[in-house]
Length: 317
Image (cartoon, rainbow, N blue to C red):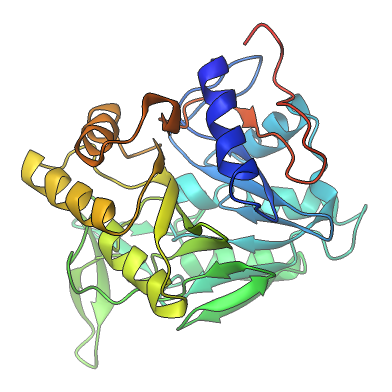
């Protein structure tokens, strides 16, 4: 596991990045952490902390932050990548837990338009964010706890050099994700296939280019990368998170890898729904060194770009 420590060190130190990044939830964990099918990551700078996604079970991020000695009371802004419960399950409990320490903790939550659309199964059962079946009830309960939802149509710089993409236009990939849910559409109110139009990602702007963070990448990696480059036309230097390639064909993986190679990708941390096979195939086709590839499959605190300290993972890692 020292391999992963070194990798995150390269991400943060070589890029002169403004943020220290800690993965707080993903599929596999160690050192007493909770692993689950989900994603969450913490950005920290001298001035503020921002959380990207909140995990599946309401206690996962809380527990793992304690294991890693991370103070979440400083988090006042949250980016939710999309409505799926494995990315939104911890939000309300995080707000309840920390608002007594900081009245603005987990208060401002950035979502892309369509996040609160009610989803249905083929049999008509409701599916909502978090552990809720009713999307409006989730919104109501969150707002009663003092959460404010900021709905994005376009990108927004929510902290210095850290952007939420908002809605991602789909030009190269139409939809990258599971099937089986439906939403009501238009004046007819007919049920149509849900393609998760609320999917968004984050982008950290560094001197070497963009570091893209995705929860699942349902809008497509290429589309998301193009969205970031429409904000600032610089290389896509690295990517962290879930990119939903675990069920993709080799042709799709290869097309994605070629595009990312041409976009300047040098570091790839494909976890959650990326799939180990897909992540390694992308890395091999791009020519990413083994030291610059991981599957984000453990709890990990990167070296700090502020004080140049080494990783705070146990030395036996």
